[in-house]
Amino acid sequence: MSAHGSVLPMTSFKCGPLKGTAHVPGDKSISHRSIILGALSVGRTHVTGLLEGEDVLDTAKAMRAFGATVEKHQDGSWTIDGVGVGGFAEPETVIDCGNSGTGVRLIMGSMATSPITATFTGDASLNSRPMARVTDPLALFGAQSFGRTGGRLPMTILGAADPIPVTYTVPVPSAQVKSAVLLAGLNAPGQTVVIEKEATRDHTERMLVGFGAELTVEDTDDGRVITLTGQPELKPQTIIVPRDPSSAAFPVCAALITEGSDVLVPNIGLNPTRAGLFYTLQEMGAELIFENMREEGGEPVADLRAKFSPNMQGIEVPPERAASMIDEYPILSVVAAYATGKTVMRGVKELRVKESDRIDAMAKGLRANGVAVEEGDDWWIVEGCGMGGVAGGGTCETFLDHRIAMSCLILGFGAEKPVKIDNGSPIATSFPIFQDLMKELGAHVMVSNS
Image 1 (tube, rainbow, N blue to C red):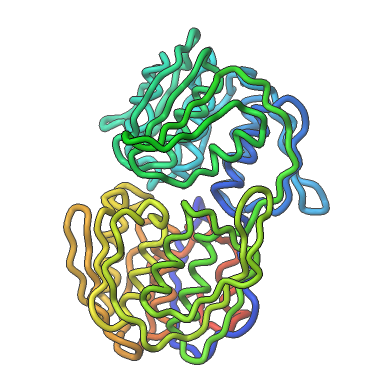
Image 2: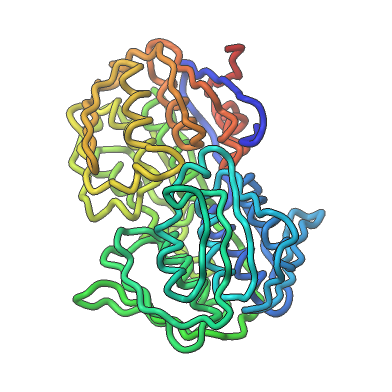
């Protein structure tokens, strides 16, 4: 499946028990950062477990364009020979980031304080997404940006020849914006300070420290204050990428709504800034157990065991939890459809500017399959139908969004009639083995003729 290729209609069907072990891909957030920070280091970084989805592969291509050597080896490992902070060369071609908002925003930050120019583009979905949330703070360093109306790609960034450090308060919770500013601060003299009122995923901070940057984090009355000392010499690392909690969400949630299921999803990263979905599911009454809890590479890890949970109840998800599960609301809404009562999700305005407007996309998909949904600017409510109560039979438009595609396919696992999606090709951006993995567990997912 290819996000850059042909349209791929797919259909999922009601299925029997899902059984077995689901080995999901490596964490996408950590994979992106491993390649970028490896490229900004002096020496060779070794990475195993890298997610080889199209988003991450596009980031690898971008780092090659900036002068780093990025190679995959026969044993499946990767190496990145970096050029050092401030060592990026000017790319000879346009940087195509495909479907990846994370990739393009982090790469923009990493080059914005070097005296080079780069032009960025992506697929139709990425080119419709706003970039001002990143280019505005990058302008404070001295970078200039020239894009389409509304701050959209294609866009050219002129890096700052004489960057200055900044203090920036992130206006809405966004790990991408925070990370872009921190990466830009690497090549600025003095201290760059980022203040976030709500904590977001902290992989960038953890990994910067691991690569040898001087970085401190302090919780204050104003929020979480992150201080980075610029112009370090980053040291290459050996990185074992944990498996992606956002990908684990799909087999976990599929097991919860499919009668008789018992699925083990091993080696899942449970960084507190990423694990909100799993705690939410437990509060709904899901039989979801953390086994073999441990720490690997500075990140908490566990094996997740998910079993069919016929008595889940709708809840009000705490708004302060949104940042720790922002990518998981689409699949949560599927579980909510099989619960009893209403599941209320607030403080989720960020969903409106993801790969698609995810509130709108999932509301339309659920309604097309007999599930009632209410929505507002930064909230939505799913009226649960209970187990066996989802009618199915509808077609979901995926809007070139991988998470919408996978969520709607899983909706079909417990529905009375098959659920179709208009295009499954974007799934390859983050979870290229999704269809095969689900089939191995016992699901019935197929490519449709129309």
